[in-house]
Image 1 (spheres, rainbow, N blue to C red):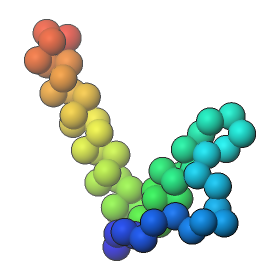
Image 2: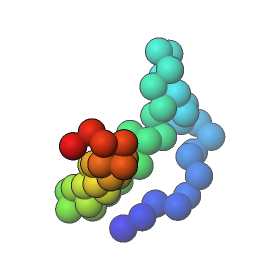
Image 3: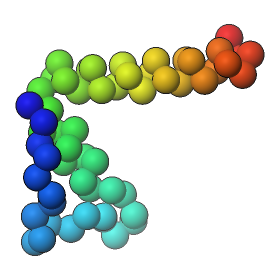
Length: 56
């Protein structure tokens, strides 16, 4: 389930301290399995960058 709708105009996009609230809302719109899949993709990317830079 992916939410492709733009943020509602009445909802702020950033908090007072600069946190991107749209990313938080996006992550909360996902199922737990989809959240894990998204986070695993980030971990896989970081591991590949570290390997390419010789940082096993």
